[in-house]
Amino acid sequence: MYITVNNQQIYYQKIGQGKNLVMLHGWANDVSSFWNVAQELKEDFTIWLVDLPGFGRSETPKKPFTVSDYAETVKAFLEELKIKKPVILGHSHGGRTTIKLVSKYPEVAEKIILEDAAGIRPKKDSTFYILYIASKLFNFLLPEVWLFNKIRNRIRYWFYKDLESDYLYAGELKKTLVNVIKEDLSTDIKKIQNETLLLWGENDRNVESNLTVARKMYKWIPKSRLEVIENAGHHPHLDNPKMFVYWVKDFAN
Image 1 (cartoon, helix red, strand yellow):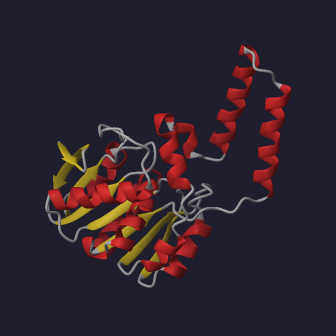
Image 2 (cartoon, rainbow, N blue to C red):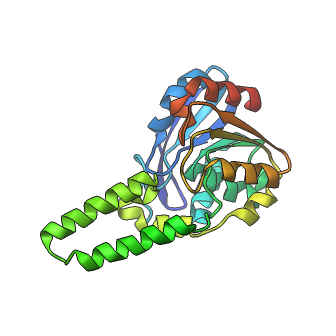
Image 3 (spheres, rainbow, N blue to C red):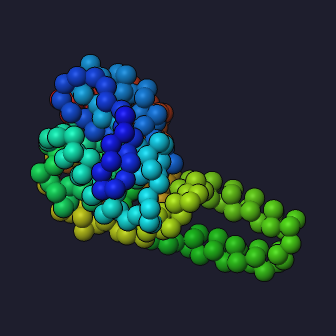
C-alpha cells in the first residue's frame, strides 16, 4: 500500500493483529528484510513494515535527506494513519531514525527497540588514517586511464565491503548518506526517556553499531536494557530470527 506524507510517496505493509509494532529497516534494505520475523510476530502484533524514503518501493527523496527528515517522515506517517503509541523497532539506519524521532517527540511511541542501531559517530583510529593514505597513494600511482580506473574501483569495493560500509550501496543516495553519518546523535540518545530494548548481534563489526556502541547507549538511556544475540552480526533478525522474535515478544507485549 502507498501513502503520501510530507510530499513523499511511502510504501508500507500491514499484517497481523494486536498491539501496533512499527518496523524500520536498515540502509540498503526494505520491508522484505523483516518478512521472516513478521510471520512469527503477526499473531501478537499489528505490524507496520515501512519502506523509508529512497528504499524499496518508496519514492527517492527530492533533496538529500537528513536524519531529521527521516524522523519527520515517520512521524507524519504515524499521524496520517492514526497509529498511536506503537512500539517502534529500528534496525541500523532505522534505529538512527528512531533515536532522532523519540528524542524530539517521546510521546509518539510507547516503547522502542533499537536493533544494532547507528547514531554514534565513530572516532577515526590509526587504521582509518592508514587506509586513507593508502587510497590517496593508489590514486597517485594509478593514472586516470580505463584499466587503472577498473583496478581502483575494485580496490574501493573490497575496502568498503571489508568495513561493512553502507557507502558501498548508497547509489543516488550518497549525499543523503553523507548527511546522516556525519551527524552524531549522542546528545539525542541521552534525551531518550522511552523504555528501550537494545537488541544487538554479538558479532556486529560495523564501526557505527558494534557492541561498544550498544554499551554506550545502555549507559546513556535511563530506561534501557541490553540483550546480546549469539551467532548474529549486524542483522540479528536474519542471523538468529528465533532469539530476535523471543526478545521482541518479551519486551513489547
